[in-house]
Amino acid sequence: MSNIPKTLRLQQGGRRLQVEFSDRDPDLFDAEFLRVYSPSAEVQGHGLSEPQLVGGKQDVSIRKIEPVGRYAVRLIFSDGHDTGLYTWDTLRDYGERQESLWLRYLERIEAQGMSRVESENVMPLSALRPKVP
Image (tube, rainbow, N blue to C red; front, side, top):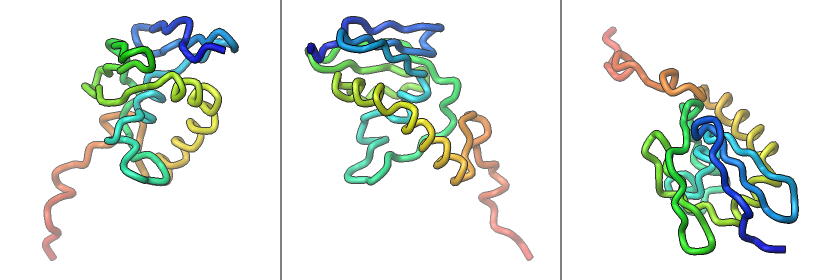
């Protein structure tokens, strides 16, 4: 079994990424999934039990794929995020656990009153003003 994918292919204008390993069916990831589960320190944190919750990424796309040695790729997202290195092991793991990870993300975002839509996560300035009795 080779750990290096046979193909990485952007689809739907960068809204999806297909990853094909030689030993199993291809995995198809939404860009939103890959963005909210970015392996970057910014998202994964340092020793957090769960990743930092990132909302408002429903419309994000992948603009570019950059190889990093023979072990990973850097995905450049339309929101400017580019610090996650997606190793082959990470992509393989995400393919195996995509459904459970996605369901957990949806549970967490709902519990925090956040949205997958960017404009719905913006706090109005009036909410920052002190209440006058």
